[in-house]
Amino acid sequence: MAISEPPFTIGIEEEYMIVDAATGALVENPPSGLMAECEARLEGQVSPEFMRSQIEVGTRVCANIGEAREELRRLRGCIAEVTAAHGLAPIAASTHPFADYGTQQHTDKERYAILARDLQEVARRLLISGMHVHVGIQDDDLRVDLMSQVSYFLPHLLALSTSSPFWRGRETGLKSYRIAVWDELPRTGLPEHFDSYGEYRRLLAGLVEAGVIEDGTKIWWDVRPSDRFPTLEMRITDLTTRLEDTLCIAAIYTCILRMLYRLRRNNQRWRRYPAMLIQENRWRAQRYGFDEGLVDFGLGRIVPYADLLEELIAYIEEDADALGCAKEVHHARTILARGTSAHRQVDIYRRSVDAGATEGEALAAVVQGLIADTVADV
Image 1 (cartoon, rainbow, N blue to C red):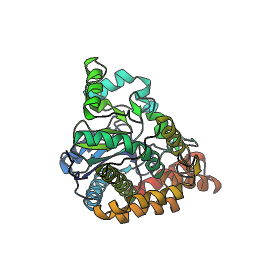
Image 2: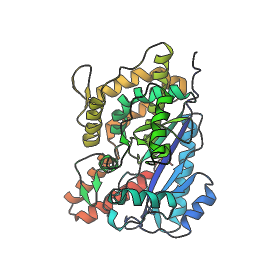
Image 3: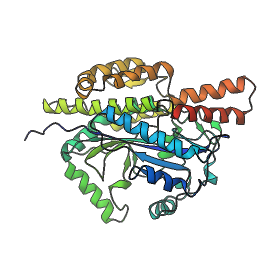
């Protein structure tokens, strides 16, 4: 039976860190009324995160990338406005440049208490923020089939998003140190391959029946079938600091899924590569971002990211036109030319040190850059 074209609706979740607007220090225990004020203004679209110093927002279901832009502008703007009244500010980055996770406290909720109890020191290190993009695909089997195919492109998306080059006051040498922290958790990384949605549900049921997890929300793969919505949820990317970068990555991900759907409709599919090979590109994106290229498995060599990006844009050009997001897809060239948030953070830090700043002063300057860039497009 033919599968009707999915709606390819979009939902985006972002997790911000709350900092002191003057010093850039992470706020370990935000004012008690802050979350209540955010909830009053953004009913149903804001929630606390694992750490008290974090706050999560989520768009409504958006028919297209234009609607997603307006939603994120409103959400980022509101959080910035509410926090500013307390002398605070949000930063959209996957790690804080100099905060120490050892002084942080997790949010007082049962779910987070269980997580802290089960994961111990691994949970205490979770001072990281991410960005999740949901794309509406109502057919269960199609959702799982596309999950297996889209894995190939996940490193390409990670490379465009990197925003976590620092950890506890040190330049890590990685563009996405968040991935190193995240991979300490169980049930993370690339997804398993399944031949049907039923096969996926049987695996999930086995873990639930064994008492390992409560439900599918504890499957933390880089891309997964959402356990709450009929969506395929992409989770590999860092949280992008600039709003337009977020929209670019969401648009490319949605277009890739539509391209893969078109292949399936024509009885074709993307070639399946061993997870070990995709994992190699995942590491390269984590380590270098897009600076050192990725492996082209067909050619058997490392190819400059710029070449791979142009190839990808050509693959999804038809889909970008159909979904009305060609401008956002092409924005990837701008990211490539000016660098990601990780590039900008390292540049601010090094220039500050070269100008005579202490390491602490240079790191504080990085945070000030993040504060400005988080609301630059709002």
